[in-house]
Length: 257
Image (tube, rainbow, N blue to C red; front, side, top):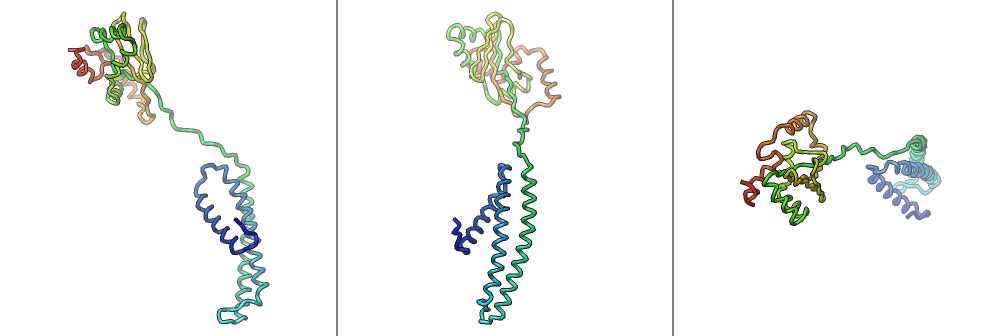
């Protein structure tokens, strides 16, 4: 804190404060803060101009007490006058800098800082196919729905989700959707990021998982066209919706051949 009576202590305080400001002003997280800093600096420059002028006056006034190390008053007096003159010139330069700082603050006062718009592309969400069962493979799950409920069946089908491997297979085969595909006479059950569709009439069950697509991983127009073309190709006997690892799981559980 300034003493207002001890020049040496207050000079040290000012020096330390300016050193801290030099470090803190390397970057401004909020540009609005710069106007206040300019105002404080302008006030500080006016005080600095006054201090330098007073130092110059004090060197002239105290010339009778000025000596060199060997006690020569004439040399000490000349050095005091030279110091006063140099300080007077410094005060003149500070006065010019103060005028420029005042102009800078006037210009800064016309700036209305606003937040930058978020230009980052938003992540998109799509539904990827985990599995799609038909015929005898679906009958067991449909029976589970009747006997144990939809939650039991949905939990059972979740075991066939191999995470990134399932997502990659779905993307490669074009089994990615804006919404889980449903049709007439189909029931739909959603639980967190999973959606199960089933139909007793048509004898099939499907499980889909919500997947967030990073903008950097989005497909180009040509790739999207190829993916759509894959979706239009006829299904293979093992069903194109089926994850490559599902067959092994089905065999282990006695569901498939």
